[in-house]
Length: 78
Figure (cartoon, helix red, strand yellow):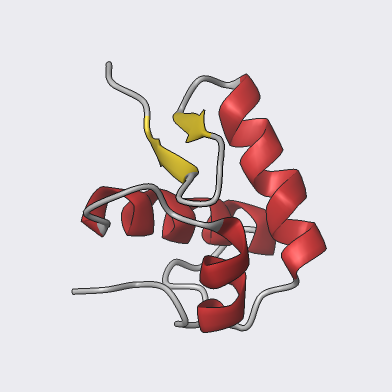
């Protein structure tokens, strides 16, 4: 079941946390690197807000980045 594009699915979560979880789920469902632009557009979430969130996920080593025209984010391996 896909969660992106839905309203917050748990009471008490901030929008930032909700969007971060949606992005992480989308990364797990994706067959390749996930673009922040595509995710934010498909989920109707501010691109700038998603950039901030993904930056924090990257600093926390929860996602990795692949640069280039086919690049994007993927879940980091444990």
